[in-house]
Length: 568
Image 1 (cartoon, one colour):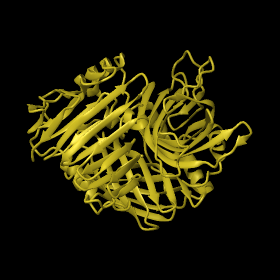
Image 2 (tube, helix red, strand yellow):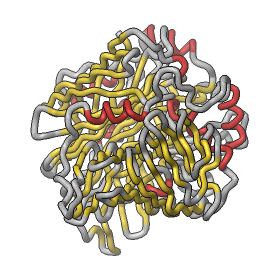
Image 3 (tube, rainbow, N blue to C red):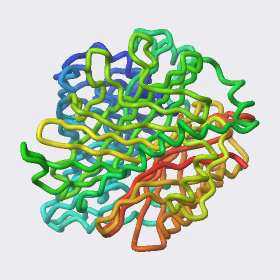
Image 4 (cartoon, rainbow, N blue to C red):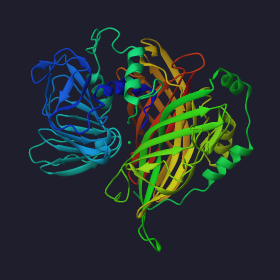
């Protein structure tokens, strides 16, 4: 998977462990960030230090540590915590393995890598055992919060499964976990704050350790290319009717290309080769089939993930890579765990399978090599018979979609560099047929050092999502607003009018990055929205725009999509 811009710096630190093939009773990862008073087996941890199998990591009230495992799993261990890595096995060739750890006390944030997507990731606490499938989870004394993906929480009294944005309490004493529900107000924000560095802490790094040059050299070692970026990743009802208007949208874009004066000015500032990074969100349906046709009803789940879009404006080529993790529930028996889709080729040795008209109007088909090989995979295995499209939506086309699809009064983001659009894929894999559809958003990445440390700014734009509601599938859009307090490292977010629902809540910055995460509560049907995003470059500011994905859950209700906003 390709990382969004705000994750590249942290993921580059995995490079030192890249030569490990199968880690059994040896190095399993690196300490990528350390604050004072963090030890492993009584040795003081420093940034870049090896973390090994059976390692016990302890922190005091002023200590914290982040571990990056070789499968790209990340654990951030908070103050006053005690974690033991009981088992870690990973085979990069098979893309599978097992991770088991015990949290004796304190709290941790888990960001799933390859093992949690295709294998077995388990965290034990004094009161519960938590199995994590993809995504993000926060675990502590008596609670579990699933930010993305899903988590199975088991105590002596029973088991619950958490979807994106859901919370449970684990009281122990033979009692079952509490029913899945949104977390208490400000709970997630306060927990994230506990993982962050206090003023004056260095993160365990000497001056210049995480400089741009050092990060680029680490990326080059990991990828074998001086310009490479480190690969990595960051969340059920009757089957929806496939939505043919997506391909009609692509056709319309090819026929109705309009470029405003502002778009033309922005395009002049762009280089021949442009790389955008961002997010995806939408729905996926899987059917079990037989030789005589579809024999079993489909399972529906939401997905969130990352996006990278490369543009060669001289050769008129586009390449998009969309990598996602699919959420599951008790009815999702046919759903895969993850996918990695490619549309179009930048490689001049392959057919372009894409078209570029200007910086806001381009389209690509599924990437199929000249020898007939389909590039896209599901659960790291090849697929067949793939059809689909990815298409950028310009301002003019967005206004047309607002009318045609009944998106209400939403005003699309007046973004300069940040792009967004539709995409869909239908394919076969053995006895299954899989249909993914939804949205992507991508922008020009900024760096953590360019995010201001003080001041405020308001970003406005739109949010759009694929919705599954009581057996019906459709798209909906709403207005997006985020008032950011750079000093407090928070943002007050509202999404208004999205499928008749208004959402509000707070997001918090992710330490040492340009990203933010949070949870929003809806005013209709007990709906809850989990949100993750990042700052993108704008014309006049390195944090002038933003984008991200969102996952919505509620009784009989499921949805996922993207948002985009511009500084006002």
